[in-house]
Image 1 (cartoon, rainbow, N blue to C red):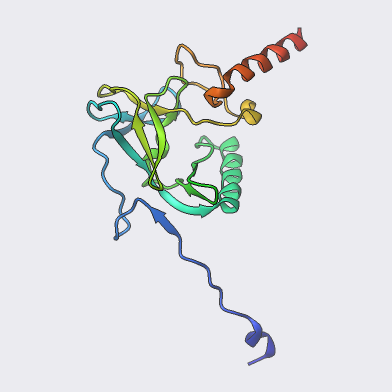
Image 2: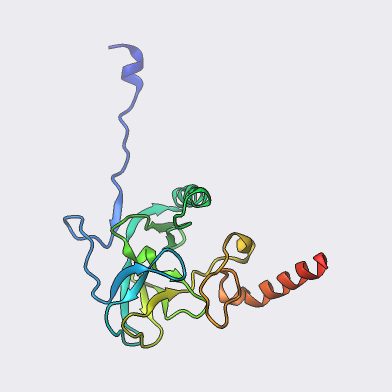
Length: 191
């Protein structure tokens, strides 16, 4: 053996850790939802039956990743979305150090679209992300939640939700007033 082969250490790459899968690697069934074509964007989640207010609708499944990895994957997915008709980002913040990369076919929760008038909200429940119903949802209604994107990238995220109070871009609700002022300033500048 040469000197180089002795000095190389074997790679200690950790196996991916997935959240929400059973011991055999299968996702659970979520009887409240089904997937279908969406008027908002491509495919969406729809109520397969009536869903009562404050109920757990579906868990966001995926791979647990560190922030640095999540940022790199999010940037790559966003770049891909600019050239292909795919979702922009499937990263969900779990805590200060860890995110969930939900970009897997078996994570149908990734198909839930944004709405400015959502019927669900994402909640961190004991280290798991769940969509929880904000009100009673009727069978056949599209399951939506507020993506809560930061204002700084508002131009990159037009909103197509069609709700009466749609602000035109996917921006967290607390920034709606700032967005309206910003858009007004830009409109006045052009005039």
